[in-house]
Length: 437
Image 1 (tube, rainbow, N blue to C red):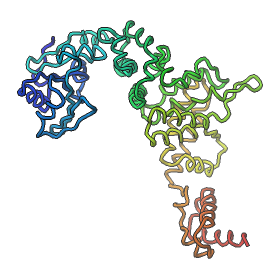
Image 2 (image 1 turned 120 degrees about the vertical axis):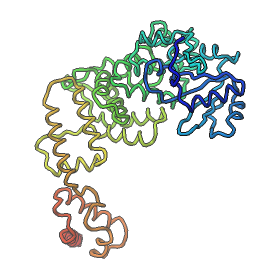
Image 3 (image 1 turned 180 degrees about the vertical axis):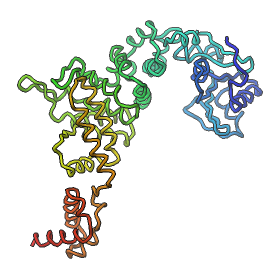
Image 4 (image 1 turned 90 degrees about the vertical axis):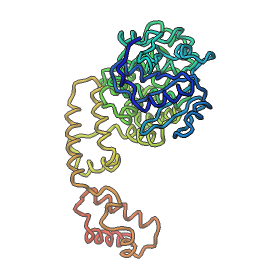
């Protein structure tokens, strides 16, 4: 046990512990809070384990704001802090059994507030010092109790930069198929945490070699050992991992990187000795949508990610007109064009080849910024006249014909923004009306 400073546990948490103890229950801080205290990191979540039942917890904190999570945890709100309180796991209603049933040694420690000591029966402090991820006691038993722990072990290794102990790694491989029994939304949460580490590629390789990817994301494995063409140094699988490493750790960009070439192995064809991937961006967007729905991603994330995937091949060259740049901004959307450019830079870097593509992309980025700075009229809603003016000038009744005329005007204005003045648009409307006679 290690002695702690008296102020290690914040006052609201000490208040909760004291109320449980006054009601003649044992209570301890457990889990991630203890791990973070040992690592000297700020603690964000203070979770408690207690000998009290859920009903007793609810009674003890009957005058305190609270709500129940699932069937075995009560979240109690003290000031601006929410603490989750859970009865001891196991049959004996003891802290000792509770800790023995936790997933990893680094998560199987407790804080004794009275003695101001860390209770560490499974050598979690040692494993933190040695930077090792190790399952508590029997790894196979721990993983079979909750298959999501298979993925959590890799996630903690990724977040902390630790190595997985060989016995734990062997148990992960042996039990990997069980992960398919875990709830998709829980898998997604762990996946996102792995995606958000500084360099996720190494941990995706672990997911692949242990068999975990096969259990929840087999489509990604289809790109292993699949060579590309002269523009790419790496296989499809390695290129995807390199792209994730190169793009900044933003959830939308990392998800986009993960799925942007996911369908390449399925549409790969060889033409005159060269591998071709015609239409892979659209095929990848469709497959990404299917996978993300399976993993219960939000509709917003699915919509935005597949939009970027569908548009990630730009095909820019220096001969593009300003109007072509504006059309690109319109197609992608002003709110997403910067994300697309950020992603595309990472995608090109992940080709692993020295070429001038980065310089060309920088030129496009500069031109996009120039256009955005001038606030070009990109949509019908930006026109200097509206549908009412169209109907008044043409005599048209409300209907599709009005929308068609506005769309034609918008196209002309994208070509030349100087045309977006009421007088000039009215002249064009009259010309369009005369042409229809």
